[in-house]
Image (cartoon, rainbow, N blue to C red):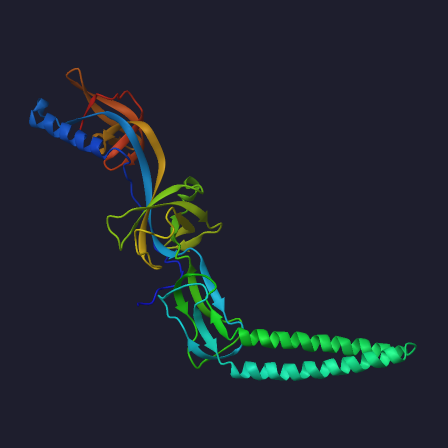
Amino acid sequence: MRPLSGPSRDRRPVRRRWLLSGVVAAAAILLASAWWAWSRGDDGRLTAEVTRGPISETIETTGTVVAADPTTVVAPVSGTVRAVGATAGDRVAAGDILAVFDPAPLAAAVAAAETAASGAALVASGAADAAAAAPDDAQARTRAVAAEQEATAAEDALAAARADLDAATVVAPVAGTVLAVEVETGVPAEAGTAIATINAGDRFEIAADLDEVDVPNVPLGSATSIRVDAFPGEELTGRIASVAPVGETEGGGVVFAATIALDDPTGANQDLRPGMTATVALPLNPVDAATLVPEAAVETAGRRSFVRVARDGEEQQIEVVTGVRANGLVEITSGDVRPGDRVVLR
């Protein structure tokens, strides 16, 4: 089974592209209409009909599949690793063995603690008897209290030693896929060091970067569509779960790390693996009923835009204000251009 990468974020540049939502068929009809008009001559002008329909601009960025809930298992004791029970890529159940520490030193510590606890208990018992026999002896009472405290501390030490011995076998606390194993057989490990990382529940999310100019337009909860390179033709859906409060400079620009929670976090229809590359599309500024013309119909002069409308047998130049652009179509937000008009294409 091949190793899996951990939950690191793969930094990639944000790409922008303009997409059309829900008007692909309309675009095809527009192009067909334009060809029909040209093929009939129509005074030699190539024209297309102005239509009304939905349009939206969409940003696109590259992301990475990461573990949604990476759980790091740490060494509960210090000692030499005697055996390793899992490798990266293994699926484990809660309670499966991840590693076993050499129990001999831990057993010896238990034996020593038992001896110390037994001795402390005898001393405490004798001190208590002496204090009871001399109720007016303040020093005897003080010695009895101190001996009892030492006996309690010795019992606590014994309990801790026994717990360490029990912890010599390290098991998975949750079910999931092992992302990484950090220990080796025969190599000492200190208490608190990482033994393994598990993707709890085999749940995934997408890590991606947003350009700083897009962050104000992408509120938390914004819907996204995701395509994973390893599964062409398949589409996942999700929502923006978090955006970093501080940006990072990258490639001459500033990007903000974002996390996308998948609607199907287990990827039931895909064998998702951390590190896979994904393309994330986020629709922005949707317009449900826009006046649309082909981009080839729009002429610009400085900051002004114009279209030529074939109306009443004449060609009229009309100044317009444009809005969303997507897949070769342009929204007209202002100007005497109406659905059903025919615009002249450049």
